[in-house]
Each structure stands twice: as structure tokens, then as C-alpha cells.
Image (tube, rainbow, N blue to C red):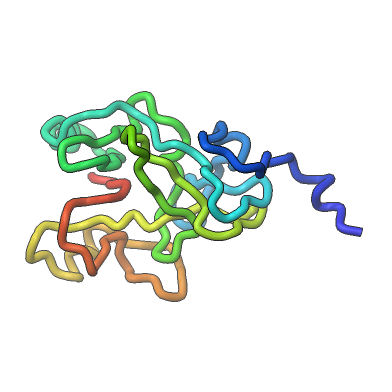
Length: 178
């Protein structure tokens, strides 16, 4: 007999159109990837909306000012004019680490909310990750990307950087700066 369902808290895996509170799906603890990470407390089905990336919405100019004043910041770019600063009023979603082969991904709703959802079935205990898909300024080299934004995900096809080496537009991921 499989006793796992008796040992794991229920995740409420029914279909939803909104995002459940993060505590329903994951806990934050030390991560082998970097600092703190988010770990599934139960099995999570592919397509489940796990958490919303929250924080203060700011302009690109304000983000640049904050990046100069702070030792470390974490921004998520919503569009070319708006970023989310999780350091101000943000929730636990900013603890989801980068992986070149993440088990989650992000998408924006019609109202500009950023949702993190499961790309595949995720087992209890597994660290939640997504590809940050950072982008460097035009002309930056792979060496620059690896130096400024190193990746420690350990995935079989790790790029060695959180930068999306195939992209050449605006940043579409969580941007640790500093």
C-alpha cells in the first residue's frame, strides 16, 4: 500500500483559474543551487498555477536607481516599462531559483500579473526552478554572461549562465543585480 498520500498535505490539485497561496505548494529553505529556494511540499501536477510573483511595480528608470543604491536586488520585468521589485511588498516567489532546465515557467496574465506554473509534474521535495532567461546588452560575450550572471543549477544542459544565449530582446525573467 502506498502511504504517501497519507503523509503529504493536500495540494488541492483541482483545476483553478486563480493562484493558490504559496504555502499550499512549497516551503522556502536552503538550496544547493543558491541561497534559499522553494521546495514542493506535495506532488504538483503539470500546468498548476503555483504562485504569483508580487512586489512593487516600478518604472525601468526607478529600477536603475534602486540597482545603483542596493547591494543586491531582484526584479522581474513585466514589459519594457514596468518591473516588479520583490524586495518591496513581495512574496515568496522570488525565492524560486534559476535552472537552465526548470520545472516551472512564468507567464503574464491579461492584467499583467506574473504567474509561475509547473511545466511538468513535480514530486514532493523537488526544488521549484525556472529559466530566468536574462539578457545582456548587445555585443556582450559568453564570458561576460558567465561572469556577471553565473549559473549553478547543475542541469545536464546547463549553459553556465542565467542569460538566455539565444535571445536578443528585453529581459523576461527575474533579474538579480549587484
